[in-house]
Image (cartoon, rainbow, N blue to C red):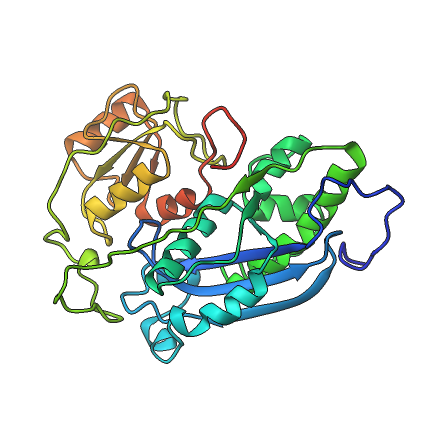
Length: 332
């Protein structure tokens, strides 16, 4: 019997909990920056007690390079004939309408969804979100880390296709229901946050060509916009990255050598996730990202001397999907 089969509870349901149900969402994207796009989306609709009502899935043509194919498996050929986001926005809205959006690292999923609706000159009918990472922390679950697969294992949920939007949404729905019931039984406040839709979007200068799949300037060397100084990272440095644990906001991350994704874009992703992008390696550096750890660059030499942890670009982009908050466990 799975977690979704038992539709009864002996505990009186808290009156303060949402009464219109939940929309468990997962989106796969071309990357993590504000100009990245959704390439697939899935929604599991749940009733107020967390029981599955139905589910929906779609590919989305991002009108640009699909990004980290090694993560989501969606190539340009697969996405070429997919609908544009504007074509599925109405159906997506019907799935979200009036419900609490639930996601694993909900701030990321909500941000990507809100931006897509803004580009389509519309707004998602969502007013609240719930992050399952934040809920896991509220419940004090004994998890080694806050990856989706770890949460799934805790509740005995089998993950079949990691980073497939439909399977990730299914896994999260199955893990969310027992979390919701545990919260209800213990009188735990749900970590609900307000969703504020974007009201406008400017994607490119007037008259500029629209990038199509396979032709995205931000994935080529030579830069995709003028360089500029980033604001200082607002979070304190929590120390070095530890293997098999998530990155944490405030960690100092340095980059060395060539990357498949434009360096400035990769650094933007790190900054937007709450990391401190460092221009050099020191004893305070939390992590060095390089695809060639055996090179003799000054950064790799210093990293070896200081014992700084090193990961490659592919591992780093996966770590960016699940960056732990600095201090406050609340999402966003």
